[in-house]
Image 1: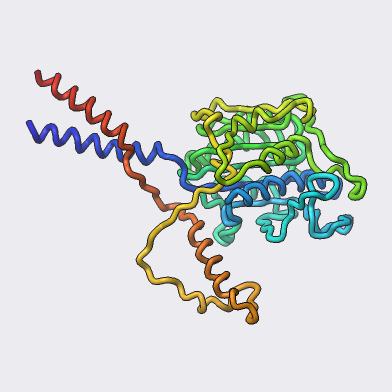
Image 2: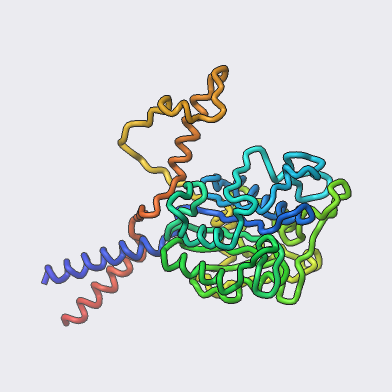
Length: 368
């Protein structure tokens, strides 16, 4: 009799371990930020993408976990009166280009094929690590896209387009290949919500700048630059994000309620039926911030001096250069993600104890 009880509880414990792993929160964050437009008159689309890029970096996602795709370089455009800068508002108040930007795909590298390959992980063997989305089944991913679009498509550089079935199938492959835990899809374009209509994979929710039949309008014309510098929906998204801190309790539901159709001048739309969590309880930092795991290791520390030839900005006059390089290497190693690594957590205590009571009562009543 006692052996049967023991078998019950061992089986229950093993099941609880598995459920604890699958039901636990995400362990890492990634962002894929895409501008699909080139040419100076599309300055605002570059500013849109860089506004989101600045926000996720400020809230803790490192460049090693960001895939940034820019179809053009407005900061270095000869028409730019402020070289090396991009401003998403008239009056040059906030430079979203920054001093340490890392563009992973630029110019003609920004194609539909490369975008889908990044999402699905089907990149060539010689693709550098910085151009790979090394996510896993415990990754929360922010996917932001901006450019010219229409009903069911988004243009890439006026040469090709990605359609809503192609985007839906890309996310479907990601789910099948265990490349994400949850996805927050954001898009700023005309008739934006149409790109999310055909999604079918679980744990995805979408926010779009406009309804079908509506244009996504620009904001803030700058007389010095000569073009509009940002789109309205992204402008008000940035206003909300600027108030968020890494420890903030602001939620996605609050972000959605912050949009005013009278100010955006289009109807922001959302799709949430594939997402199982209450968006009023989903923190903004679950997608715009970063979860950083600390792993203890008994291995000997890396000899940083042996890599001195590869160190950028090597300055013999600076006593802190070795320390800065060591910290940089340590952070890169901490943030690196191995696709085959499994993250195990302890079983949740309360569900386990409750399950034990249920099984015990079932066993006792079945033997009366």
